[in-house]
Image (cartoon, rainbow, N blue to C red; front, side):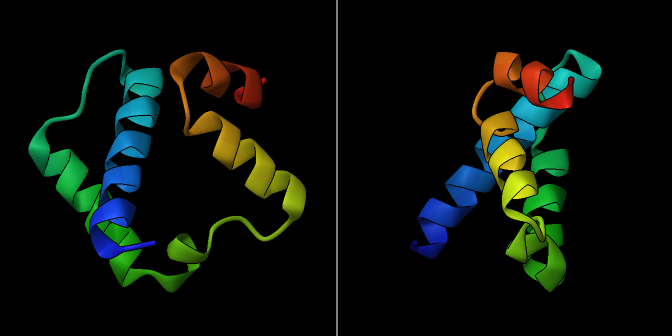
Length: 72
């Protein structure tokens, strides 16, 4: 995945999670810090450790409705 594609995926993930948690779309500052955190912390970039956790995180990042299902 290219750096541009990875950034786009992280920005979409940030939007979904922020909307789920706050009911609002994140501003540019929040989105930039989310992407930066993933770049600075190798553990975040690697994703969840287990296959089940990776499945849930991948599902949750796609859409707010899927986030609710994964959170349940």
